[in-house]
Amino acid sequence: MKHALEIAVAAVIIILAAVFLAQNAGMQEASGEEAWGGADSEAAELIEASGYEPWIDPIWKPPSGEIESLLFAMQAAIGALVIGYFFGYWKGSRKAA
Amino acid sequence: MEGFLPGPWWQIWYVISLPFIIVGLHQLNRLVKTQRDTLPALAVAGAFVFVLSSLKLPSVTGSCSHPTGTGLSAILFGPCIAAVLGLIVLIYQALFLAHGGITTLGANVFSMGIAGPAAAYLIYRAGTRAGVNTYATVFLAAAAANIVTYIVTSVQLALAFPGTAGFLGAFQAFAAIFAITQVPLAIVEGAVIALVFKYIVTLKPDILTKLNLLSESAIERLREAAA
Image (cartoon, rainbow over all chains, first blue to last red; front, side, top):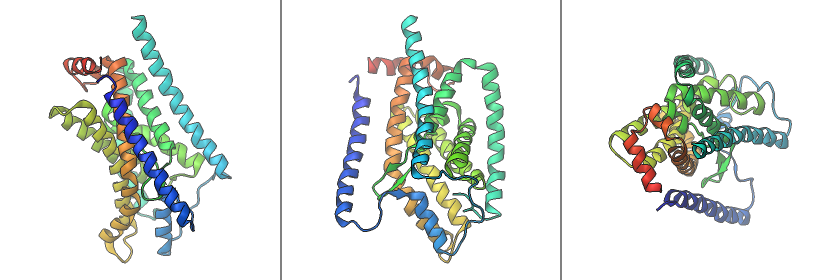
């Protein structure tokens, strides 16, 4: 099978996406509190529940969720650019050889 | 999480991580001098940490978390160089995104840059020696890099915040938040990196032989299977 691995990876992603959709639909019905927050903020809540206060604040915080996703997207874009560039370069040099 | 590790823990993790970073920088220096033709693979491995750690994915526990993407660099270049790549990403996220933090950098470098990659590296070496299918080995190694990162994070938090439940009780509480959320993400991460490994085998197999990861005969077999 030439594309066995591709099919397996696609299957994994589709199954997990389906689980997410089904679970999300269930949560929407139950509604109430906000779902799909970060696991790290849950841990932070657990720690703060014990009375601990962070002893220092971040020097700079993204001023809004939009700015935060801009910076995350930029991080992903820089990475994707590098990956695409080199895979393209390798493919091109194989063809030329 | 800036400020979430009290002294002496944040200093301890800085001290533990530092030697790995120094060895990693030394290894990088040697790589740049003697094996320049592997540098594109280094860039790609670093880029994968960038891309994957920027994605917050929803998981079965109803919360979101990050893949780490460090498995590929650990397999290709070993855990010390992976630690340096992890450090770069962690600094980016700490400075620009208030994600992680400067005081917790030492602890984060240890979990994401050292412990996870070390697990990936050992699994890859053991799997290859035992003759397990290469892509299955890469899958397991990259998934382990992810899971181990968060298990170690839970250990680090439980050590700093044993609370009334003691270390084990606290570890269970943190692991319930992190490790279980991480299982599906680790599976996706392992699968994606196994696929990337296949493309490296197809397009640039000589890098793998140069880095002593696969013998030429092993690569020949993989390429025939994909033809």
